Image (cartoon, helix red, strand yellow):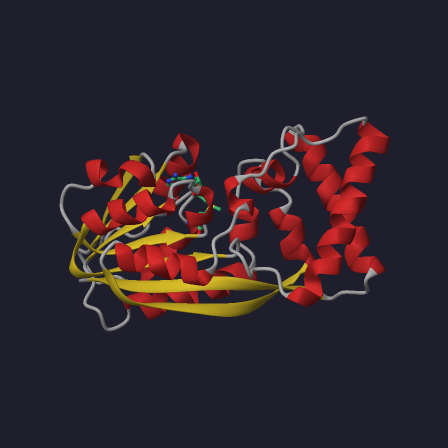
Length: 269
Ligand SMILES: C[S@@+](CC[C@H](N)C(=O)[O-])C[C@H]1O[C@@H](n2cnc3c(N)ncnc32)[C@H](O)[C@@H]1O
C-alpha cells in the first residue's frame, strides 16, 4: 500500500520508469560496477533499476533521510537476494560519514535539486567514490526544465490553482521559494562537477512527454505540493492541484506535457 503523499505513484508511471531505466543502464553498462550507492533512494524505485543491472554479490547501499521511505525500500529490494543490500538513514550532505568504503558508483536521481548546498554535496559524493568511479544524477528541476512552449500551461495552471485555493478554501500559499524552484543551469552543474574533481562531465537533456495521468501522480507527492503551494495542508493542496491540472490540460487541449530532464554522468579523476 503506497504512502498517501509519497513519490511512489509518480515513480511507477511508465514515462518515469523508462527514462530512469535507460539512464541507469547507460551508467552501469560496461563499467564493471560491483558497488553502488543510491542517494535519496526514497522507496527504492531507482534502487531496483540499479539492482537489476548489477552482477551477483555486488553491493548496493540505499540512503535517504526518510525512515518510512527506507522501510519500504528495504521491503521492495528483498527479492534481490543475490546482492548485498543495505539501507542507511542520512542525507547527501554527510554521506562521507555514512559510507566508509569507497564505491564504484553513486546515483542521486531526481533529488539533487532538493539540496541547498550543491557544491558541498558534490564534494561529499566525490569522497566516497573510488578513483575512476562514476557519479550519475538526473533532475527535471533545473533552469531549462520547462520548454518555452509549456510556459502558458504553467501560468494557466498556477492561476487556476491559486484562485481555487482562495475561493474555495480561503487560503493562500506562504511566499517562499523551495530549493527545487531555484534551479541551476546545466553549465552551473558542469562547473560544480569539474571543481570537485570530475573529468569531462557528460550532461545531456532529454525531452520527456508526461501524459495527464503522470502529472496527476506528481500532484500526489508531498515534496511537489509543498514546493508549489508552501504552507498549504497536503490534502487540500493535492485536491486543488489535481482538479486544476485536469482543467488546464482540457482547456489547452493537451495530450502530454513535455518536460526536459537533465542527465549527468561524471567520472572521478
Ligand atoms: C523525488 S524523490 C526521488 C527518489 C528516487 N531517487 C527516484 O529517482 O525515484 C527525492 C528523495 O530525495 C530525498 N532527499 C531529500 N533531501 C535529501 C538530501 N539532502 N540528501 C539525500 N536525500 C534527500 C527525499 O527524502 C526523497 O526520498
